[in-house]
Amino acid sequence: MRIRAIDTIDWLEHYVLRVTENPIDMHSKQFQQIRDSPLIWNVFEAKFFDKDCCVDDVWKKTELAPRESITNEAFLFFKSRYTEGDNTNDSFESVNLLDRYKEKVQNILCSVSPSIEDKNRVCRMLIYRYRNNLFHGEKELYSLENQIDLFTIMNAYLIDLIDSVMG
Image 1 (cartoon, rainbow, N blue to C red):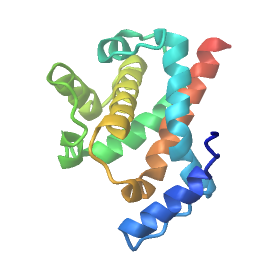
Image 2 (tube, helix red, strand yellow):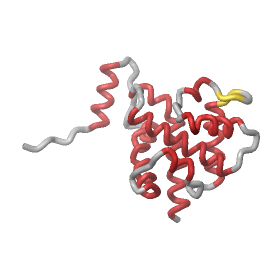
Image 3 (cartoon, one colour):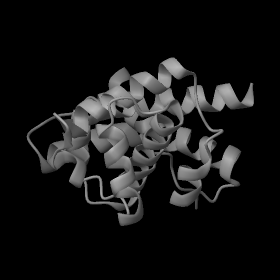
Image 4 (cartoon, rainbow, N blue to C red):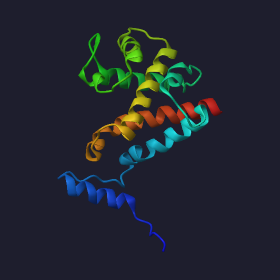
């Protein structure tokens, strides 16, 4: 017996309609950013971490950096998302960083002029947490549509990093 191929995108759209009143166009270019994110992460992890990435490696590998313009854009996105004035906001708490990195990331996000290395550390750490939250955390499929900008930034950052380092 052969298992038939299923149009997974259509199935997901129908699933979301069954559990919520909010339809999602999973065929859209915007939603593609969310669908592609795990695959882009897999390429990143395979290329730089021998398929076994841990949080300590993400923090320490300072040579993993995209172009400075991409780093600055991603960092400003995260800074605007997680800070208000001189402090981190409630949204920052939901990222669930490990205690040994939480204060470091907080200090860099709230810094007036962090180094490019520190900006990259923060970007990599937050992307790592989003990747983990997407696979392991509590989330609702239909709420992901509100995160398209986040996934667009994450994907652009990782793709530019991979291209920059790999040449």
